Structure formats: C-alpha cells, structure tokens
Amino acid sequence: WVVHALQAAWSAITHAESLERRLVLAVRCGNDTDTVAAIAGALAGAAAGASSIPDAWRRELHGWAGSDEVATAAHLEAWVERATAYAR
Image 1 (cartoon, rainbow, N blue to C red):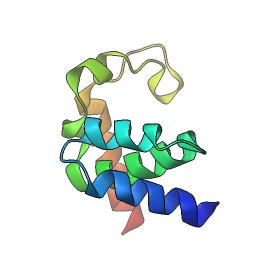
Image 2 (image 1 turned 180 degrees about the horizontal axis):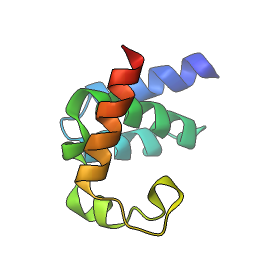
Image 3 (image 1 turned 60 degrees about the vertical axis):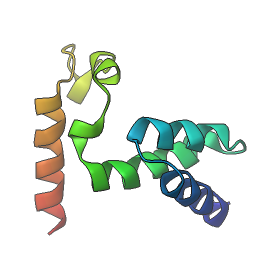
C-alpha cells in the first residue's frame, strides 16, 4: 500500500500546477486518501513553500503547536525553516 500511496501522490503533484489542485487530485484518487494527501502535501509543500497555501486554508488552521491561536503564514514559514535546518 505504501508504493501505491506514493504513486498516487506523485501523480497528483505532477498533474497539477497549484498546491490546492494537487491536494484535491490526491484526495479524489480514492482508496487511502488521507495517506495519499499527506504525502502529496508534504512533497508539494516542500517544493512550493508555505506561502503557496491558499489564504482561506490558512485562516482555518487552528490549534497550531498545541495552542489556541490560529496559525499564520509566518508560523508556517518559521516551522518550515526550523524543519529544514534540522534536516541538514
């Protein structure tokens, strides 16, 4: 199932231009959609950056880092920077 999920995620991110469209394709592929969308989101987000997340989606992110505050693009960008630095 791992190979199938990765293949479906790769197909979704290579057949669309925007992060939103890539994730919609990933979810619509069927089967293990949460895993496929998570993989597609990770790959597409890493390539495009947190700024590619649609504003409407950012407004809906609640409970960021275990708090009651709403996540902002700055929170996401900072997290990506920390995660990238950690991975090096």
